[in-house]
Image 1 (cartoon, rainbow, N blue to C red):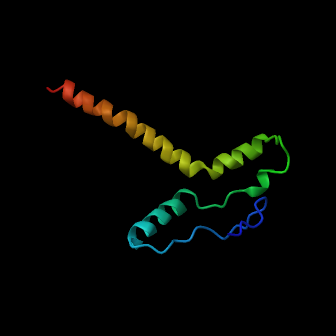
Image 2 (tube, rainbow, N blue to C red; image 1 turned 30 degrees about the vertical axis):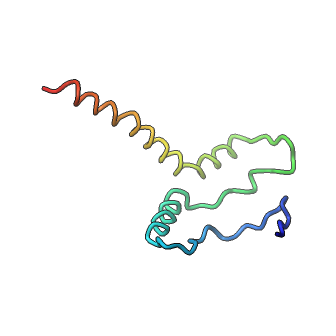
Image 3 (cartoon, rainbow, N blue to C red; image 1 turned 90 degrees about the horizontal axis):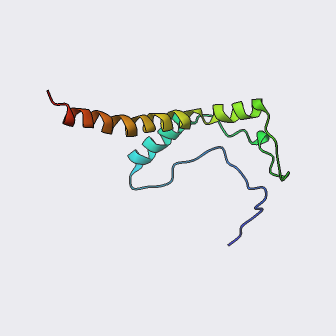
Length: 96
């Protein structure tokens, strides 16, 4: 098994749907990923050759903008995890 150049791996144009017995689910998952994160990772911001790299405020803002879709999904998930049991408890305990 050939590993190739590990320090500089080849990157493709993006994720491709693998052959599967459930093409509908694969299409739905890839559609969600394209909706959440449509832009490629800004590789030029991350310098792997230096042991300690310092990020400027603009670099951090660009990386957060890149991760904005995942941050919104995480916020909605946390909101549901907190809100759904709270509303259920209110319905159970405060029946009028």
